[in-house]
Image 1 (cartoon, helix red, strand yellow):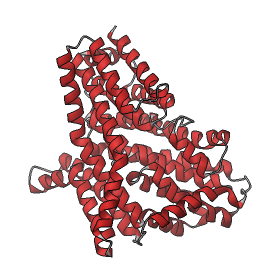
Image 2: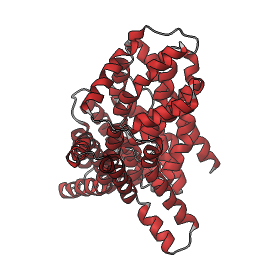
Image 3: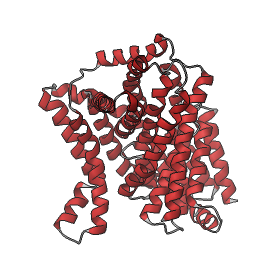
Image 4: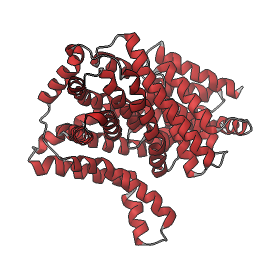
Length: 447
């Protein structure tokens, strides 16, 4: 009966989001309250679970997502995204342009929201098509694959950060496993998959006009400044290096000042704060950008972050209700006795929710809320728990179709029909997600 109640709750959640078009934040809270009452929780206990689930989750997520979003905004404003793309393309040359675009997407996707990064980078495709005589999708495919992987697999982007917090995974291990699984996924879904467009003729010169017009408007709206490649890379890689350094230090260093220092600066709060301070000074203050302008950029960046934070908090509420009601223990005991690997279960849940409602963030958070109680019974190592995080991210990447905003973004900016977008973007997202999952399964089997 308890399993039936939880299953019904998930079905109701999808109906509220898909059919009634309720915001995911409201839908998650409604379903959390309904499931809690149906499981027999006293109203006072249910309200306490909602409060603690929201508070415990937001105490971490709000800080990390806020800092990560401001870092991405400073990179976008300063021209750091274009600096990375331009330098990699110049060094790789036309022959390696696909690999350079995949690498650019992977790096930029770690720090900048997918929609923003895509709009900034897609105009790079036209000159490559003009000089090589190739179809736009030959270059767009690796760019989109890199952005998908960077956005979904590797912290400090909001999705994997939120899932890691809900599953209580070590963020350093999540970064390591995200890179180990994400790089092959970006290669297979990017440069390798792009070979199917190698023999296609180029399109008419107007094919990318929508992207270029939007990019021109964005450039006019922002006071772009010029920064070097090393400065942009340092801002992106600094928090990743500090967080991974903390994870490594806790395993190999003895107790002492060095280990304590690494633990402090390697905490996501401090690592991202240091990266933001560096970007603020290097991209803004040192180049005489008005302080008021910097404040506007960083404040405006928090608007989309607010949605992510609230949805993640509501996912934490769902998780807490399952734990406090006791159904989490029941589900954990049940699935621990089955022959279903937790990594497969996590991928399947995330994939189903993703396909049904479209949002990768909602899919990741909902799947994490369902998976978290199960992991308490499995005694997984930090590396294994990180692989479950990656499996959820991979599931939330597959089969992007008409109910996903990313589908329509690609459709508009590449001037494709709906059928063409299904054959290109949907295939790329699915190949990236499935490859990431297979890599996570392979590593899990080795550990």
